Every structure is written in structure tokens, then in C-alpha cells.
Amino acid sequence: MHQLTLAEIARGLQDKAFSSEELTRALLARIQQLDPQLNSFISVTEELALSQAKAADARRAAGESAALLGAPIAHKDLFCTQNILTSCGSKILSGFKAPYNATVVEKLANAGTVTLGKLNMDEFAMGSANESSHYGPVKNPWDLTRVPGGSSGGSAAAVAARLIPAATGTDTGGSIRQPAALTNLTGIKPTYGRVSRWGMIAYASSLDQGGPLARSAEDCALMLSGMAGFDAKDSTCVDQPVDDYLAALQQPLSGLRIGLPKEYFGAGLDSRIADKVLAVVEELKKLGATVKDISLPNMQHAIPAYYVIAPAEASSNLSRFDGVRFGYRCENPINLEDLYKRSRGEGFGAEVKRRIMVGTYALSAGYYDAYYLKAQKIRRLIKNDFVAAFNQVDVILGPTTPNLAWKLGEKSADPVSAYLEDIYTITANLAGIPGLSMPAGFVDGLPVGVQLLAPYFQEGRLLNVAHQYQQVTDWHTQAPTGF
Image 1 (spheres, one colour):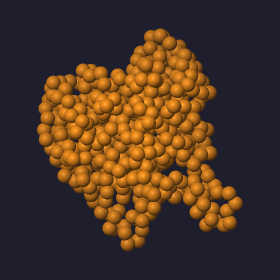
Image 2 (cartoon, one colour):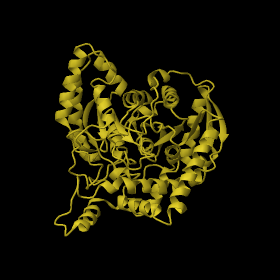
Image 3 (cartoon, one colour):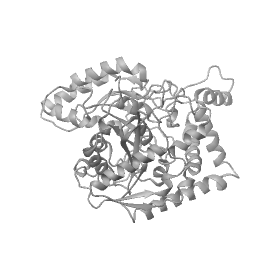
Image 4 (cartoon, helix red, strand yellow):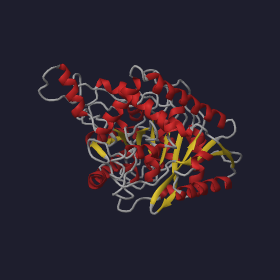
């Protein structure tokens, strides 16, 4: 049963081929057996999962037939889950059990999903490799010596290894799309404001957005249908009707205009990945799409702008973790200042400290205008580039990552080289537009992802293009051996 996609699980439950409890028990046994190799779970919620599975079976027996009813999933460990450890992959929250559910968790639970556990992640979602977690690095199921990408690396590894059919993730600068690319999954970052951030522990509030990782565009459409929608508790959530993502999948691609930015195909891109991207373009042309060369002239400024804005917001958001109200507290503090300093110094990891320091510096007197304000102006220029591009084309296509999954520890001593892996994904977060990564083949046995970007609230268009491509290719069906 572990080979079934989310859509196949929905059909199997509807046809009574198996029960949610049977499926849940099978996946829990699989997690217990195989996850020690991957380290993708921080906690496994067996008791909760079985109770939710039994409840879902009872609802189906009573005549309910919602697509997600009884489907097992897991949540990235920054979505608050009531009375369950919510640690953000950190030491400072290593004992925190949230007193409430995040809106995303609540919506999916109401849809009938079964929560198998909480998934490992880079500490406070800061990283591109899932190596900064307090609970140890996650390993890529395609090659256990390599990273799965980050920060949603636990979500990606668990889905890719067929431990679960789908998972929630978050994307601040590519943290859904990049791990999806490195583990052969489909992952979508919705438009900023499409999915509620309430109960999602913040890294950078103007950039963070929740979304799904799954094996196909159809599965992502199912998940996103359950996650999206207005939430009055989140002031940044947009009150706009949710599209019928499943219906959108079936639209033909004839007349689709695809833009290829020249900036995506520069010297930093592995030529073998470029070949895979162009092969996808050829397949889409066979399906009726046309291709146009375009330019995103301010893309070169995206990484420096992002690494001013995101750390600045992180510096503010993480100031609440002070050893006083909740989370880790140092032992035997001398006074209040010592409590603050040692609780934060001992509780935060190196990457989080690095970003807090950068962000605090950028916001300090005398440097705000020189750094933070300038970065926000660049952000507007990047948004304007996309607005101009979408006047010419319907979607933008390119590589998700410039390189294949790298070896564990390879970039640990050089954080800037890891930051550069987000070059193609960061711009979507700065502009707030939706982005999707889908499988596009393999190089030396390692997955390659292709990214699609669309105008605001056109998640359905992205899922449609990916689904139509997946109807004529089988890359997304390939699974790592040994799992």
C-alpha cells in the first residue's frame, strides 16, 4: 500500500479496497522500520493517527466520501499541533508542546487526514540542506550520503521514500521547491496569502508560505485544496475564493505561452540540468505550448536582497525566544541579562545565530537605509520584472536548482555556497507569486527538478501544466531503491 499515491489512496478508500486504519498501521510499521536510515521524523504520533484513522473509517461508513478522508500525511515541525511537540527543528523549542493547532493542521484534520507525525527540518527553517536541525541531518533516500534539500527536507525525504504519500512544508526562499527537486517530488509554493500562516512558527513573515509536497501534481492539487482558503486569524491571508485545482488539471496546453528567462541559463547552472530543462520544454511544445525568450534583469540582485530582508525579519521574530515564557532556559542564571544571553546562546544553532546577527545589523541605526530599505526597493524591482514578463507569457519555466543534491557536510564550512543554491527559487518569494517544482529526469542517478512560475493566484495553471507533463512522462513515478 505504501506505493499508492494520494489520489490512488482516495479511490481505494472510496472503493473499500482497504480501510484507513489498515493503511495507517502499514505506514506506521514502515516508518518504524525505515526512518532510522533517513531521520525524516522528529516525532511519530501513533496513538493520534490510529484514533483519526478509526474516526475516518466511521465517517466513510456513515456515507461521507471526501477525497482526503482517511488519507495519512505528516506535518513539517513548524506547524503547531495541539499537545504534540512542535520544535521547529531547534533546541530552544525542544520541549514545547503547542496548546493549539495551526490553521493548516486544523483544515486538513477537518478534511479527514490522519497525522502520522512531525517532520524534521532545518532549525527555524533556515537552511537549504536540512543539516542545521537540532535532531541531526536528514538524508536523501536517493543517496544516503547526500542532502535532501531544505528546509522541508524531512517532508521531502519521507514522501520520496514512500513512508507517507504527502506532507506539508513551508517555503520562504525555496524550501518546498528545492527539496522537491532534489528528491524527485512535486512541490508547490502558493501565492503569498493563499494559505494561512496562523500557527506556523515564523521565520520571515513577509516571505513564509505553506504548501504541499507529494509525488504528483494531482496529489498536490488534493492537498492544496484542503490547505488553501481565507483565515480571519491571519491578517496576511487573502479573502479570495479557492479555485477548483482538480478541475484545472484537465485543461489542454494548446496556446500556453512559456517564458524562458535568459538569466536562468548562465554560467552557474550545471549544463546537464540545463539539458533536462530544455527536454521538458520540447515535451510541452508537443502538447501545444509555445516558447518565448524573456528577461528578468534584476534576478542577479535577488540573493543579496533576500539575505538582508529574511534575516531582518528573523531577528525580529526570534526575539520572543528568551528563556522566560516558553522553550529552553539556561541553568542557574545569575540575573535577567544572563538568562537572556545564555538561553539564546545555548538554545540557538550556528546558522540561526548567523542570520539573527545579520538581520539585527541590517536593522540597526545608521544601516537601515543602506541595507534593509535598499533591499526592499530591489524587491519591488523584482516584482515589476515578473509583472512585465507575465504580460508576454503565461508561465515561466527554468531549473529549480543550479546543481544536483550535494554531499552531506560539503557546504557546511561555506554557507554562502549553500545560499546560492536558492538563486532560482528566491525571486518567487520576494515577489509573492506561486511556484512549483516537478520531476524532470535524472543525472548520475540523482533527481533533477524543473520550476514553473505563474501570476498571482494561478496555482491551478501551475498544477495543470505539471499534470499534463506527467501524463506523457514517468519521471515522477520513479522511486529510490531500498525503500
